[in-house]
Length: 113
Image (tube, rainbow, N blue to C red):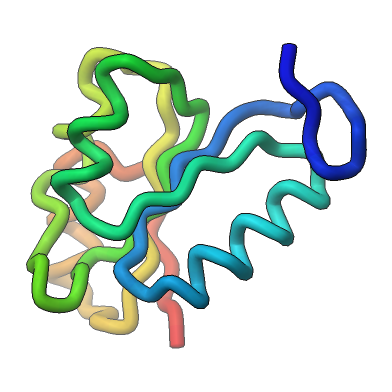
């Protein structure tokens, strides 16, 4: 089993999907330091391509991906991994977006700034 930056056995794996590279770097460092194995991608397409051959316990995604648009239904990516927890963070915090994300399979939504 692979190790984290802290040299410990990983708590689990996290796929971070965010078009902002700095956010990916920050989340990678924080989550790795907390004991998670982290893989970052910057587009919904890259996430959907990565998932079939890999395992993610958690998918942490932004609702919108800059010029790449929406990820689509959050549950669509890890549908072959029903145990995967999908967390959607968004600066576009509306009740409609939260309901849409939850209906599509997100475990939770969070407003990001």
